[in-house]
Image (cartoon, rainbow, N blue to C red):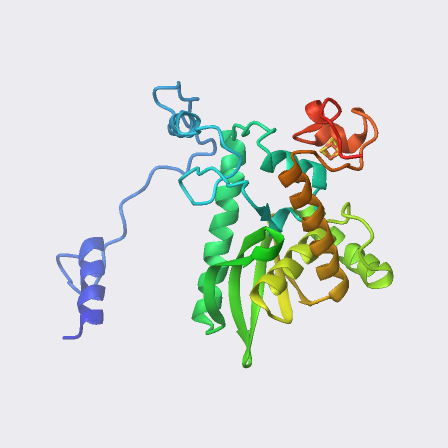
Length: 290
Ligand code: SF4
């Protein structure tokens, strides 16, 4: 007898057969009426019962006071001995002040740590996907523009036909995701003229990797955090952008070597950019280059 029929017989057996006639299945016993209201007991756990609270405490204890987390589960201090390609869009005075050790490492809140870890999770998922699809060449590829004091880590190198290209993965919220279209249009129409356009910041980052890796084209892949929908852009190496990076790095490195900060864009401490800046409270107390 096949397994299927065995299984069927077991069900019939469980439901019960009429003793007088084994071919007749007995009617099922009466069941209690279906309740209309489902009463459930719930409570908010105290600290000693709350797993989330204990995890939060763990994160707080293991936060050694640094600016950035580079690995899932760990917090490591980000080196400021060189200019990070991912920060090239930032104010040169801010970058130089970090390199000169004028900014105390920030404590990372458990919430911010979770945001970073989420981003690492997205990177892991998308690079695994690219790998399975046969498109991934390498993950987390270090590259340097040593002569400019600049370096960074491209999220991935992918293959498009016989070409190798850096891939930058971005996990962004719905609001940022929806702005990508207009930011793209603005750059296509006017070029990059400012870095309040978030897409421009990412494009500059890809330009840094293209220079560092000696490649001609790169990709930006955005995932919407709210809905996991995707948008992708290809970015071609731009002589203008590379010249901008060279000039900016030169200005920062000269300032760092001379120990004098370059000028920044803010004119007063209440400038909207200064209010959000990690160096904002000290910026107007420090000596400037000009
Ligand atoms: S306060 Fe303004 S000028 Fe000063 S470092 Fe920050 S962004 Fe630059």
